[in-house]
Image 1 (cartoon, each protein chain N blue to C red):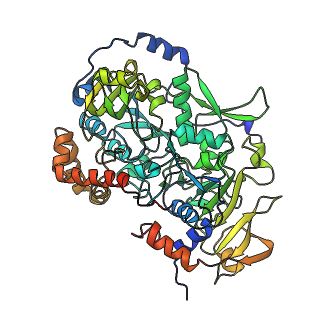
Image 2 (cartoon, rainbow over the protein chains, first blue to last red):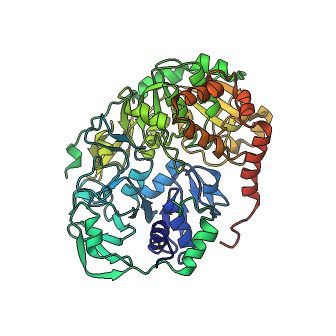
Image 3 (tube, chains in turn blue, cyan):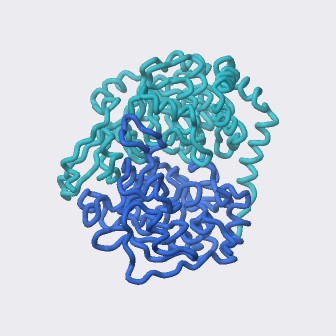
Length: 256
Length: 335
């Protein structure tokens, strides 16, 4: 019997992907919880940057808005949006953690609209915000999403933020910075990376209780499989305690 | 993928021509006049139907929400709007159907709080012309305008539909042969920015993130400042390092304490999450929403009355405590 929920699992797994002494562009919600957990476990010197200008705040709780004062509480600096984005553009931001309504096999993301006609959307969504910028300019993009067919789609209704575009070398050829791009996809069922040549999404680790077929059955496009698939280490008691007691005691994120 | 040959399809709502801007700025007053006036007067004098409007701040932080109420109350229409992580301000302006064209980076949502039904319905109605951008793109467009140049090259948006439905262009860099995204300068007709302190001439101080308001103040043809407090010109001169917006960019100074309520003001007060939640939930019932707008905007004479109707001083004390305690207590000292 699992003693953690889907959101807790994804946050704990994402937290382990961030490196100590590196920099990460972060929004609110689950990505912020993952970065905070990383700071309190493996990566105490992970530097969190918010697009609104905060650099390395001491986060005591998850901000409700990317601009609220918690995003620069006891920070090293609070600058401007341009300052953070130019830091990404200059190649000094290592990670971005993003989500989206739809993801395709190359890690491209949609957060703009659902439906076939852009001018008559079935559902209008907020748009890029900073996600196109982070996905374009940070070195490694980590995508967090629940594994569902309606989210992992063959064809995006709208490509808001770039992954590997059409695969192969298409991302670099488009003019996006070389060597940047999607790095991991973290879902409730598996951890995926991107096959180095084709840049197609591939399963590298399965979460406890799930098979490759489970993941494939919740994904519209064909997934690749790494030569050896690992089993994801489940959240530890310590990770869960920190997440529940220190990071999100009101369960605003992990209670979703 | 040969991005360099791709064209965008979106409309450009404003002219990026730097000489048109220079011609305007040449005529802009440099007089150190007393620009103090009521918010009502400032909106009447400087914001007109059809203008392209930009709002300072970010999300619900340091956003001039009292001014947004006034704009809706005065029934302004057919405006252009820059939605640069525009959340509750966007919702207010959408409720008033103030704009009919929007440069979108982030709209409709209120970040972690959910989506605004009225803003979504208005954006899905087919009555609003739209153009896609990202937060960096809008920041770069304002930076280009502030610099007095027609565009700024960036490396975002390449290869995506965000570019396809924008009005940006791509070109090959003449130095490196790399493909660059060109962000056209954005010169709004008018902007409103809420600040912590200003003198009567319009020299302004901001605490916390300036977001893009330093560039927005330069880029905008007309600029209305709402300020938490007035300070003397002498105080400005005592510490010129702290002036973020100089007086010659400013057309009107309005003293509006709590002018960002129900959003937050760094080091002053936190956002009123209960009232923001009420805004979102009341929209499920059309009649209730109409009554809510009437009570809080249309038949509410000013910001002071609005705050009194939603908790008054006890509520503000609570929001101040929430904001200030956060800055006093080293809750996370061991990090």
